[in-house]
Image (cartoon, rainbow, N blue to C red; front, top):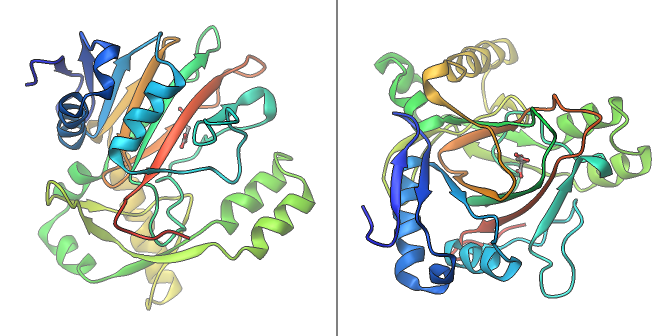
Length: 279
Ligand SMILES: O=C(O)CCC(=O)C(=O)O
């Protein structure tokens, strides 16, 4: 426990809230290191920070890695291009279980989202601890998955977005042409904690490399169902000014779309690991 703030677990497997954080201290290395320590343990951290300014948001992001300038969403503009806006009024949504951009060779490792405008009710976000889900697999299944890799592809969700009229056909063609897909191990090892985590999602993972398609479908269907056990999950009911940080190496997330026609506007930053290149 840090003397700079208090961390209170919100669930046995995943989720904690940070209390008594003095926002003036988010530029101090000791505060940022303590936040990082708490994040890798609890996997998703809730901060109640209505006064958080974009420069403070960015300072926290920069501690964790290299902030991404997102290619799909608008941002806060000059000086704050790394703070992305996800606004339901612009048609943006993330109601799908995913790791952020797992179709990249080196996807973002941490994401932090600050709630600016919320619907009167609904709009919660859910996370799944993929470390806890991995631990709960049978030893036989763990052995079976050892050494297997799966493809993560952006085409599936783009096709779904086209069918839902969320993107134009021009934008769809443009993104498909980018050929964003990558092969990742099905089980990854967290670089800080050493814990193993499942690294698959029903959104981006298309198939397990080298298996017959029926076998790949069956295994992925089993794993996706396994991950949905409620005891691996954490759900946050947002208040305006909350910021949640999550560790993309150990969790999946899904923002529930149950609030239309109301507005939900979030400001978020995601970061790449500094030592790895990304595409
Ligand atoms: O809006 C949220 O709660 C999460 C959105 C999301 O999936 C993301 O920012 O990566």
